[in-house]
Length: 308
Length: 287
Image (tube, rainbow over all chains, first blue to last red):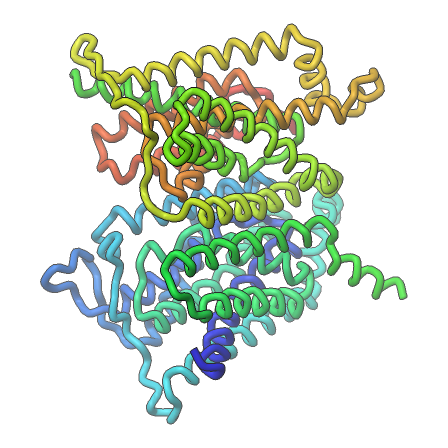
């Protein structure tokens, strides 16, 4: 793989995953909610996009719906699908705290995964939907690779701006107050449940858009692509970058994606060697993750800066 | 009717396996105070050590199983001391997320050493007995007997021995336990040994009744979580009942709905229990 190709891949996927980490950061570092089902909102977006733009089923296809709509309708549908899924999962679960919330969101994500895998009428079951529609970029005169990088970067910038805007507003300070001391926030008249719910739902929308973009890039959606691995990956990226700052989590995600892509682009003689390399990469990710949680270098750095 | 009875019996066996797999997890939750996601990976470690000694080194099944269980127990202790002890004061959420990292490391190590593919132990084929039209194999019976024995011996251990009482005291009130002269370090170490040893036992059982692949651990953690939550996080005796409930519910469901949805039953249990009765079967509501 040449350098330019590697750079493009890293930028595209890095930005896509960064959208998720930025949203997760909003939920966790600011809202105090542990969402262990991130992949579900991503998958909801990707599947919604695929279903809306797919041609009606024919031949061996087992899915029921294909609306053959233009790409921008599919893109909007992706955001809506993710939002709806956040409403469905957030409404009953957000009164739970800490690890209980983590477990319920995790379980919801697994339920969605299981439905996508077993219910062939949604998206062909384990086969998935292939040949997902791509928007035509020739209008603006860019090759597809560059266009997708541009789209991913744009989506990331918009998401970051949205998050920063929310957090810098009085509304953001109310969210901080709820996280820091729920009782106190409630005592001064903040509707704690509503605030948490709103943050949860708002932050799901960009994840859905990222899912749609992911479906366009890979032109394939299948349950295999949306496992709990994605959730864990995003969490590791979040911790790696040092939670709390948008810049930090984006850098963390880019670093992790770069690391992964570099290992993937290495050339191996045998399948077994590639397998070992992938596993070792997994192990190293885990070790780095545990070490960062142990010594918390970023938090320490941040607080030192504040004192100075 | 026989078919339903057959599913029920298979469900009991699944339930007994889940009891073995979950007790260690719940013990960790009770004493160390966090959800150890890496617990399921310990099952994998033990299963593959047993497999390696049994098929690659040519040992008999029993010694390889014992070595696997002991090795897993000490690996658990090592990880507990190395990873979780230093960050205990950072709170259960950080511990929970850290254990995901540990799961990554162990899972990656197993993948790197063993590689993908399906494997099974070098043991005689299971003998099937037919009782009133319901089939059960001898290996399945071993699982049931071991689950019962584990339940009884754990109850004896926690109620009769000094270490057991110390574990219970520390679980209920660590500060008070310390002031009454209980060695917290020693008790914590004993907990890690027992919890990981139980994971090791469950792993060997898994190797015995199922075929092994390296992603096996991940599928177990989901069911372990379901059982632990239904029991009420951290409670031990209700694990016995909730393990059977989840096992029977999963296997009986196959009678009515496609088998692909079998794991879904476990998550449905998680969601319903957390929404309706977060304190679980144990019923000790905590604020």
